[in-house]
Image 1 (cartoon, rainbow, N blue to C red):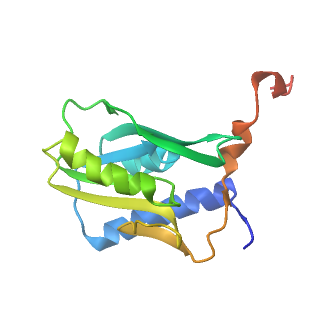
Image 2 (spheres, rainbow, N blue to C red):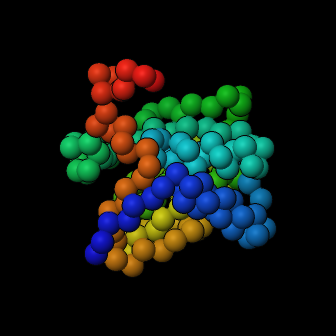
Length: 167
């Protein structure tokens, strides 16, 4: 199982493919929720393409060793959103589904916390075979469960002192 190294260009194309796949499915939604941190970029782009409000739900499980070791899943008590009210037909987005624990827990928790949610679907860029949860939309199925190196991960270990002086 070789690691998957993703460039910014590949990341953007995957996000656009996801937007197209969702559109072609014909499913209508009125709210996007992204799971932070991984889903922030995907959620932002989809929010712009679909011209819909974006809500952000923070979760945390990969915390140690630059985010490579899974710990206890924490789902924030509150969601951040600029719109006054959460929509009822929700598309929940993240960058990938690895173990599936986060997406499964959030899809179970959201309707409990927000009873106005009447329809909920999930979308990710990468879906790994080892996942216990299958997303409704995904761009790439990964049967070998590679570790995905995304272009923004260089910032996981960079600190302010590491930024070149000419920036």
